[in-house]
Length: 340
Image 1: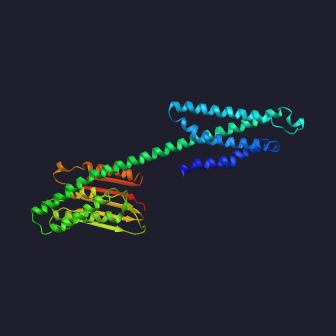
Image 2: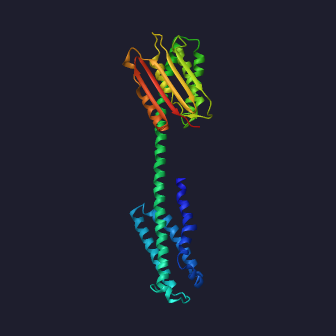
Image 3: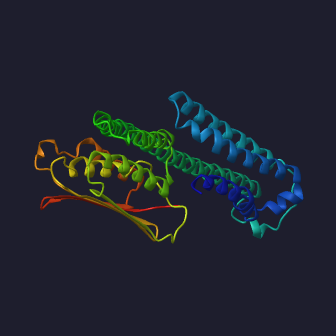
């Protein structure tokens, strides 16, 4: 809508404002005396408007040389307007009663009318030209900000992928060393995860169900790290009140990775809880895990920091993230207002 304002203003001037100004002046006497002059004047005023609007005004925002050229062009239009006003004075006209022109001579009145129309036209076209340039700068700034956000999101996604690969390959390596019979199944799941990773990161958003399935498969692979298959609990609920909800891809996985990495233990029987609920278009996500006894390796690192930045870029004022680290528990609470 913002881009259409200059076009609407052009039509308003050409179809409404200029004709209205003409009717306020003694045009009817001009038409009666010399219709050709009226047509020439009207064409000149329209030419001044669009020439000044699309050529002269934009030059003021370019080089110094272009500014000088623009000033010369404006002086040229003033000269031509003066010639037109002088030419009108030589046109024949019907005598009028002296009481209607007591203070202003007829020729001077016509001359002032021409200059009034010119000044109104040049002023209005300049204002519209400046408005157009302002809108163009606003749109350009918005586009640059959008491209910047896309570039930052792509960077954060690129940083997430190596972290994910390291964790998953480490799990598969452990299974191979232990000669687990489920290595083949795990590798098939890993292939599905890789396909998801390299198919969706370039997309701005994907169906939320695909992201949930991705998390499920990742959790299944991570369960191979522990003998207790119930050590990772995933709870998912969707009220299905709103269809077609989408989410930024690979946004939640970092929190899941973090909870599993620091929540599971090879010596203690620990639990990791992951809850995902979608209610009336809002996604509620939470993870909870016990903090490791050895805190030296426990750090949110770049992964959580990237997630914060991605949330700020993708869901400004539409998300809430809380991370609690107290009472021996590490808890993440996230809510996102999703869109179709």
